[in-house]
Image (cartoon, rainbow, N blue to C red):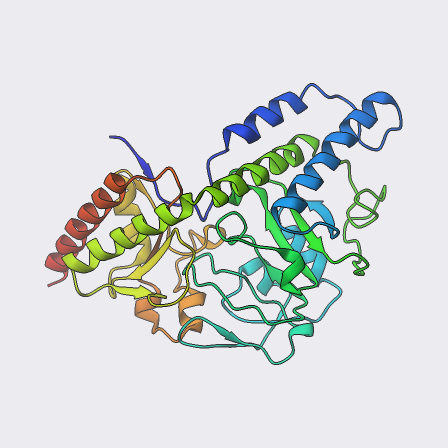
Length: 347
C-alpha cells in the first residue's frame, strides 16, 4: 500500500533545502553567545536565518525572536497582556486570551478593539482566512505563513506568531515577529539571549533549518504552485460533492487556505473516519493536531454555530505542492465507499 499524506496543516515534510542547511550547521560547534571565532560563526548562522525569516515574512526592520514554536510564542506575547480572542483560535492562544470575541457562522470574527485583541490569519481546521483589522495587537500567522502572500510591515499588527514545521522546516522552532520597540516580558529568564526576550542557548541547527525553509517557501509562493494546490483542493471537494450530497463543506464560499478542505458527514464521527482512512492508506485529521486524540466536538465548528453532532463528524484534509490529482481523486473514491458502508450499517 502506497500511503498518501494529506495532513500538511498538522506538519509538513522537511524541505531538502532545510535538511541540507541543518546538516551543514551541525559542523559548526560554537555557542552563539561566545565571542571567539567558533562562537561568531554560530552567531552568523543564527543572524542569517533571522534575516531569511524576516525577508520571507515581509518583516524587514521588525524584531524576530526565535522560540520553540508558536505555543511558546503565544505564552511569550500574551502572558503579561489581557488580550481578547475567539473560540476559533488555536488552543495555545485560547489558553491565554479572554474569550469573548464573537464568531459569525461564516467563521469570521467581529473585533471591537483591535489594540486589545488577537486574531488568527487563517484557521488550521477550516482554512478560513480572516480579514485582519488595523492596529491588531497579535495575529497567529502559523498556518498562513508560506501558503499566502504576507507582508508583516503592511499588516499594521503589533506582533505575529510563526512556526517552522508548517512550511517545511524542522519541528521545535518558531518565532515571534514584532514591531521594533514593542515591549515583551521574558518568560524564560537566564542568559538574556534573543535580545533579552528569550533566554537559553539558541537552537542553531533548527533556526538554520527555519531560515532555509522560509526562503524556499517564498520561492514556491512566487512561482504560483499554491494555485495548483487550490485547484486540486477544489477537484477533491467537487468529487466528494458529486458522489454524495450529505457532506457539509465548512467555509465553502469563504476565502480559505488553498490547501485546506474541512467537511462533515453528520453522524459519522470524525475520529472513526480518520481511523478508517488511515487503514486505507490516507493520513488526514479530525481537527487540530494539538487536540487530536481528544474525543470531543470541534470547538471551532461549535463556535461557528454548528450543532454538536455535525461538529463531531468533521475531518480536515490538507494538501501541499507535492500532492497529485490522482491522490486526491483516490481519496475521494475511498472516502465515498467508506461513507456508503457506514450509512448501510447505520440503517
